[in-house]
Length: 251
Ligand code: 13P
Image (cartoon, rainbow, N blue to C red):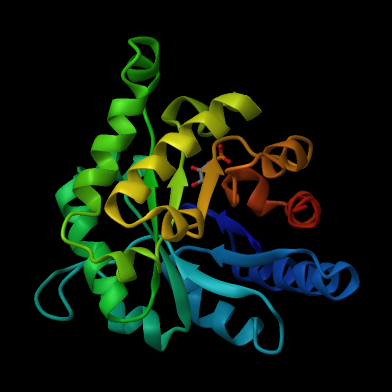
């Protein structure tokens, strides 16, 4: 399966980084034909520029959030129609930073997933346990619970159009990556849940990405694990050389 390498810029970046990043990625993709779909998710104000800059390249654009209503009096929010107009074909939802700083719940994530699917934008649904949950042995139940609620009521054929990102909170921005085995084991747990909600062969084809301190050095071994179908990259997606190395690490 083609891997997904998705850069989540969070609240970082500039217009000039959009240009240098796309230029570097375009060159890398032309020269190496990596086995990866590359997506950049910058802050909202850069999506228009990103849309223009990726024209004629294989790079795709994504957003970091969306609201589930289509328009109206929702000050500060962004609708799925706006994402479509800006050429975003992917959207991250349920990131742990949105859950912890902005009160995003599994129920809200579910509503966002539904509206994205209805509008043909691929939801990148983030799940992952905190350090406390891992240390108390609740990591598997936490992730299964998040998936159960976020995917509630979504049909098997719609589920087949989703991307799941497993991001253990303790590994995000900490330099502490989950080991290859820890990550792969959790991906198997997530895939088991997806198989329950769909069937074995559908679940096999739903990309499950790992995120949490992925860098130019550890990407290759993470990406070679049986159940890791790509990376959701934070800090290293702001550095063109490092991000390009991650892209070419896809086996
Ligand atoms: P870092 O790669 O900076 O740890 O961030 C991971 C992440 O949260 C991507 O969504």
